[in-house]
Length: 173
Image (cartoon, rainbow, N blue to C red; front, side, top):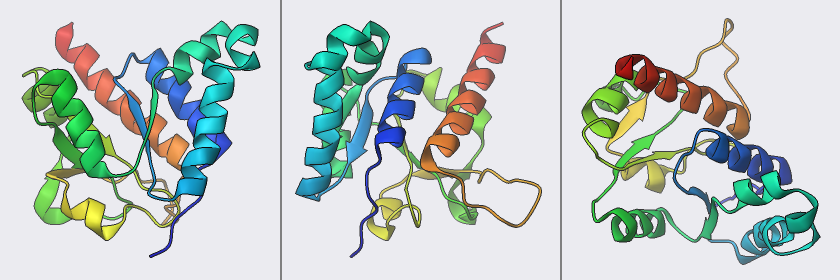
C-alpha cells in the first residue's frame, strides 16, 4: 500500500480554512509515523513554538488540527466529543453513482438536523479503497471545464467547504 506525503501547505491552508469557517477539527490522517512526526513538527511550531507568539492567527488555526492514525480514530473522536456517530461523506474525482449526495442534502438532512458530519478527502491518487468503503455517501465531484480533474487537496477542500457553507447560509436567510 502506498501513501502520499503530508505537505506543509496542505496543513497550513486547511487549518486556516477550518478556523475561517469555524469547522470542527481538521484531522490529518496517516498510519506512517514519519509523516505524523512531520505534521506534528509543523503544528507544534505554530501552537507551542516560536510561531505561537509570532502569529496569533496562525496559532488559532493550528489549534484545530488533530493528527491521527486512522479514519476509525476520527469517528471515535467525533463520537466521544458529540455523543453521536458522524455521517461519513467521501469525496472523489469520479462519480460513485450509488452513494451520491448533493451539497444541499448535507445541509438539509444532516447539519441542520444536528448530525455531525465527517467529510473525507484523499490526496495524491484520491481516497484509499478502505476509506472509501466506510463512507456513507459521496459528494458530486468538482468538475472543471476540461476532462482534466486533479486538484490539490487544499483546493478541493476549499471549494467543498464553500459550497456546503453557502447552502447552509442561504437556507438560514
